[in-house]
Length: 234
Image 1 (spheres, helix red, strand yellow):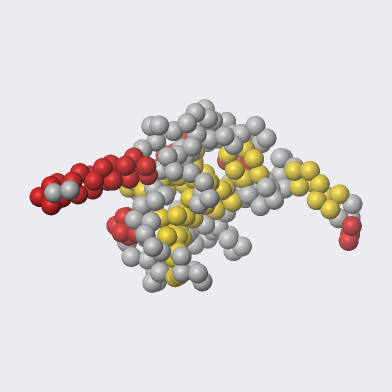
Image 2: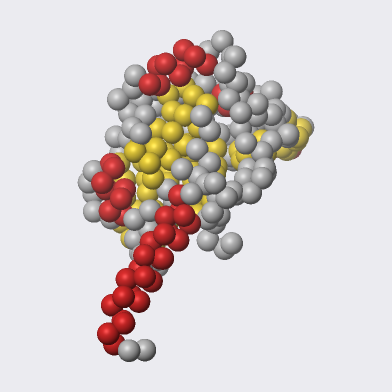
């Protein structure tokens, strides 16, 4: 390679990497086919909740591949600087994990926790913990949107999914601690989305012999968090 062509070649490589990065992290147009959550706009509460959401000072929207805060968009894979640009300086200095492979920053008032890869400072996990064991008295917003469906902090999971076409066992799955949407189209990077709400199960027996039975879809609790993470092993 002749040295006089090196700057030009480096510029082209940088441009290509930039374009790939933008598409890789943010472009959803090439996503695979699958189930897409449909809001139930005809539900009696939908318009009221949607209007109340629009008036909030803090507006969070969690779509399948992209996320917004007050109309500012960000993605899993974004840089530390991009998150700081949107949310400002965190409450404390970054806290590193024991193995030093990642670090977290927290916005306590907004109930946000972000994890980044230490070597690249790219976002790997976005967590919004809207409630805890003390409830949500200090949460500075009442409604967030998940898959374009408004969730009010007092709702149970079943009340929320009634605002959409989600159905237990059809397109909404669960384990012993959380719920997951089934067969959603993939993002250009593999992402897991967890709906933090404790599933209800039937009880078998009694006393010291009580065992967990089948899942009870009629009994659900409020949502306490949404966690979106990069699938590192894919």
